[in-house]
Length: 496
Image 1: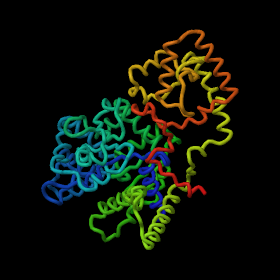
Image 2: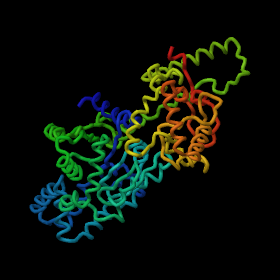
Image 3: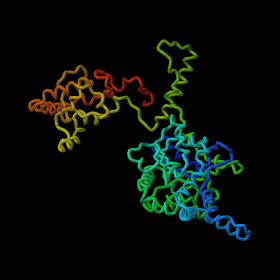
Image 4: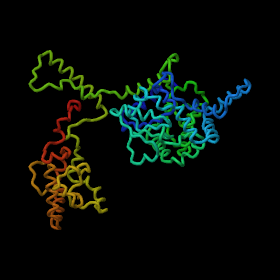
């Protein structure tokens, strides 16, 4: 894989993190390998165990080391076999059968020694990025404790079990295989993985949903990691050929060509970040992940160009000298070019120019209201009645103006109350609606139907010119239009 391809994948992730509405969301699944980036409270060389190291402790308890040299050679050979890849889960079955579930739970907790480690700098940097969700198969609590450190930048909801899923809000950290010390059993044996899709179907469905709706990235997994292999198997079984592409991120330079091909056939795109660091680099895995996260961070940290606007504090009394005038025009010209480049994909027009002649005709003749006839036939609306407004306005109405909801919303509620301007204020509209509710009868509806017909023929200018600012509760008689708002900056020169 070329370096350019790797950077393309990283750029895809960065764009999704920065602009999910444009490029799509991105989720993350973290494996045991990432926990090695934690910091030890004691010896600096101490690290949380990976799957093979955990399996070696099980093997040594199940098969004590022999004293004879010849037997020891076979013992070492079997140890390599039984503590590698998916054999780890079979070894866990043997351990549980010879001892019990409590024994393996204790072994996991003592080996991981969760309280001995604290989240490292990489944990904090990774979680500050805007992932849609973070899944983890790790038993430790490093990610949960990281949330407490970065809650100002990004706040995650912790999902310890599938019972916590209903009503949860993204972004979330979802624990898939248990959590030290309270959420057990820890998923580790072959039998645990075999029954997992049935016992924990909600968690499997959540991961599948993330795969369908987001780009799923795996970090901290080896190619033969039993967690990785099992999750991939479940997803392939349920989604078949429609299983979306998954990014497997890490140092995979030693992965053989047949192994790569096998993963690619399963929909796995290998993002080998070994090229981000030199071969002589000490602690290459840490440095490579740090460089990877750094590239993602670089793409997120874009300055707010509107906060950089020059001469923001200059008032109308400023009298620049000739030299200052030249500098003033130069800075504003440069700033205008930056803004022009930023909004290049869009067309920025004044409010009165945004409606075409055809659009104006449709609004004047109320043709755009025709789809609402369907709601009238359903019985959800009536022909005459207060116009339906945004749900967000419900808590802003005064008790009197809330009376407009005493009747069904309607297609039209013609002006009865006099208005001084073409654009109706919110207060005038609400008073008109309340008047209708208070004088509701057959003759009122009949008069309004006739008035609606006349307006349709004549043209409802007040609808065509309705550019009122949104209702916020205290602007009942505010006559300003959207274009009058102080915080809207118009760059008419750009559209010329």
